[in-house]
Length: 446
Image (cartoon, rainbow, N blue to C red):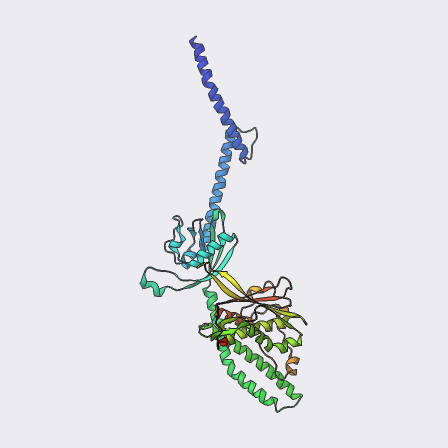
């Protein structure tokens, strides 16, 4: 009887054990089915398959760790800076170049810290947030001013021109590549200084050549006089180029102080600029189409802004087909400032021609000095037309400085200018934006 009870107890104890083993086998089978096991056949048991899967995953994990270390070494040895922040803007990764560019002392990626604690740069924070909100790669250039708690080292710290490329990563992290633009900025300054020095040196001899040519022009008879006419036309073109280089140099040195700001009627100035170019426009039977208010008073330098309109109109006239329109639209636009949250008004001037427009690759560079687009947007002087006119109209040297001067003048007015192509006509679309505030018209006072 005791033996029977003993056997019954063993049977009762074996039932939960067998159930546990069955449940465990089912779980192991499900795990092995979800895992990528190379030899998942009847040759190996479930436990063996599980051990093989664990070994494979360990090997894969080691491979990933080696790849991760390789990429970290590449990032640390890269000639550009790289940093990475998490969703809370904590710095999780920063190579040596980024630490040097941003003046970050003792950058330890194993101890994440808020980026704001290490780097005081509004532009960098704005770039990161822009990439996170737009979910697209973003680019920005700015001057970085390092901060230091030690007042004795303030004189030794130098500003650094930076260009940042930010892009969104997984889990709302953001990576940023930083490029030091100091060398490019120095080369540009040297180029501009060289061009300015050459322009100063050329101004006097070109003036002498022009005076001699004008003196000979009245004393010679055709056909000998035709050669002097061509010489005078080229001298005028070179003199215009020199003057444009000098204008750019003057505007770069304290541009705001170079302006003679006063209340002017923008609409009247637009029509005056077109009237100055009417002889050129009449040759191609071009017409000005104006859309906007009849009067609009602004605070600006009348002579400088007149030069901007001349350059933009001249650009449109040169590349417009015969018997077409050059459209000008003027209006007020409201802009919401991201810094202060205040709404301000800007004047928007759109100048659209009916030509072939700018090549897409040329759009980022059309306002650079000496930049020339493809031949369809390049100037080809007509010597015969210059010779036929006793007083040739020479508004631009055709060397790629007209739009550069326009941008410099507009930026001196705290505005901006951009280039694109009109989606309807395909012609060049030049857009100017200037800050606007109401100006009292003193001329209407009694």
